[in-house]
Amino acid sequence: MPSDSAASPTTPALASPTTPALASPALRSPALPLPGLFVAFEGGDGAGKSTQARLLAEALRDAGHDVLLTREPGGTPIGEKLRSLVLDHGHGEVDPRTEALIFAAARAAHVAQAIRPALGRGEVVLTDRYIGSSIVYQGVGRGLGAEAVRDLNAWATDGLWPDVTVLLDVDEAEGRARRTAGDAAEDRLESEPDAFHRDVRTAFLELAAAQPDAYLVLDARRDSADLAGEILAAVGRALEARAAVVRSAPGPRGGRP
Image (tube, rainbow, N blue to C red):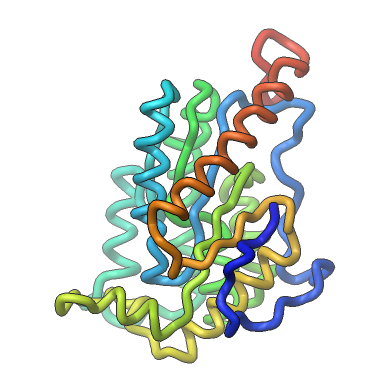
């Protein structure tokens, strides 16, 4: 998908589309698709992912679609408990490897218990964060290696990747200003220094540059309604394409072996 033409002039330089460390495995096979559509919202803290996911869910429901709106970490009872452990202050030291494994464990439950069943029912699944966040936060930000974290999460999810990823791009200063508006408290990751969030932003943009057909990159500073309209249009096109693939797949509804 094309990047937003109104992207910030301070956007860091993107890596080559062939960057091996950040490239993800292929999306779900179009030959044997699950009938639903999987959309992930990614971006730095304070980018407005939750707002845009909610607006998209409302628009799709108004159009007659069944929608699962969910988040990571979370989305299941065990996922919400793991969310508290990894994001809340007060649980002692969380070293990078433990952090990566907690996120992967929460994601494994999320996919097995919520996302994959909803896709099998033909629903549109919208998640606030997915594997991309682990690749950039733990793989790059924590220095564990993008490829190692990608592979861990590919195993945890049995290779389930989004059909569309919406990346809302925000610089570290704007993100912190949004997060702390009204004296709001930052969680354990949000409170990392600006240099960490700068690296996260750069890594997200590199990830998107490596898969331009899978990402819609938008400047998070734009008007919220304008962003919502562009996201809805992109997801509408993806729904049309998914429906055509499902109709042509073998069997009554298609599916994975």
